Image (cartoon, rainbow, N blue to C red; front, side):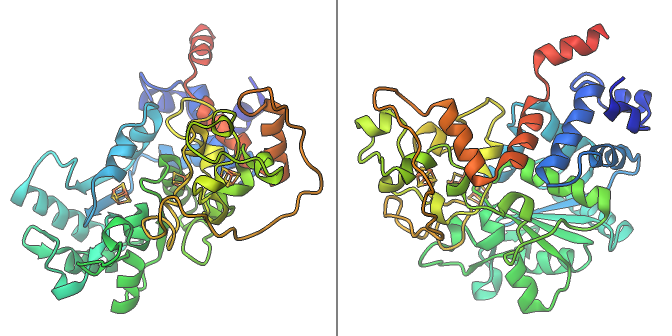
Length: 385
Ligand code: SF4
Ligand code: SF4
Ligand code: F3S
């Protein structure tokens, strides 16, 4: 038995029962450790997170959808990894979600009322989509009520609110000029109505499911929200600009740019700044956490497309797609990296250098543990033990 398992007093039977079929116990504990590392928590906190998740009393969650495209929900459900949807849907009590409700109409509305009454001040409210406030909020109605009045009612009685996606966090697509419905983010509605419930923003279009999951797990474990920045975003996920951790950064520093899609520089993996990459002004952990659990390169810049700043207020859906970004920090390189013109792509050494320069090692390590969950060889090993 390794050190981590010795430290954990989690009942193997209970955990195995809960996770039956999809994720082995060893991998689940590893996953919780990975989540802890991603959030910048000490290594041993993984066991604490696992214990909180195992609590048989599932925390009630009400999900309110306003002006949205359902992409945020879809991205959580379509992860090819079993853990995110399993944790979200089975370990919380999702009492109301318009897309996922088994019932509809009056039946669904009754379930919502019941959960709100029974869990007043204790439930987590998740909101996706922006709130139209123009003309009394008539542009989005659910069950005959405006999203504005529903947010006011549900938000004022919640323990905390998670605004998932750029729409809920800062307006997103519906707020793009000329913002015909007066699309407004959740925290601004709260401010104007004097609602004091804490709000955490998880921007992105859609955001990475692991950032949402980590925030939920943090709340379950510590009964409070993680440390937030001045825009209400968890610092563990949005503490650094993409440009700092990008694998193409050494090419930026060396002045090597793709000038057109498909040109030689593009094919060789050079920096996409001149194609309009907004990485230098966008805070997110896309380069270290990656997407879809398919390994390295699975993020916009990794696939050869400039970041368009989907998570950043004033950048995504605001700045022209291919206009040059406005770098927040110009960090003069202390030395230039070696680049081999004859070699396609970015060498592993260059990637490591980028990570090292950016100080991304901790985030990347956590991401690697998280992304490694469910690997077939590990599961096979588990079964053999
Ligand atoms: Fe859709 Fe993007 Fe808005 Fe999420 S943030 S609801 S994916 S438009
Ligand atoms: Fe990466 Fe974009 Fe920065 Fe170039 S400009 S290093 S592609 S984030
Ligand atoms: Fe969005 Fe840019 Fe990440 S477009 S997904 S913030 S790389």
